[in-house]
Image 1: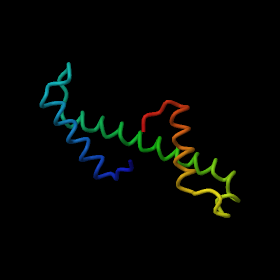
Image 2: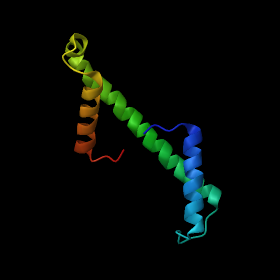
Image 3: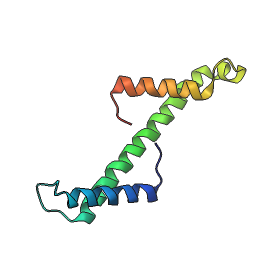
Length: 93
């Protein structure tokens, strides 16, 4: 799922508030620091997915003639290749 910067910030703030409110940390930490750490994790995950999508597009170039002729559906092939790479690499996306 693709999130923009504002959505990532909102999600980070929400999760950090929940973590602090439920005392889920063993050490005391500022909520803002927790939010920034969560934001960084989400941003890195988004970059990972972007890199994976680029790799899938590179792989799909092998099927260019079949895609242009209509023998293969672009979205189905993209999702199939992406799911295969996720499974092979044991990624959580």
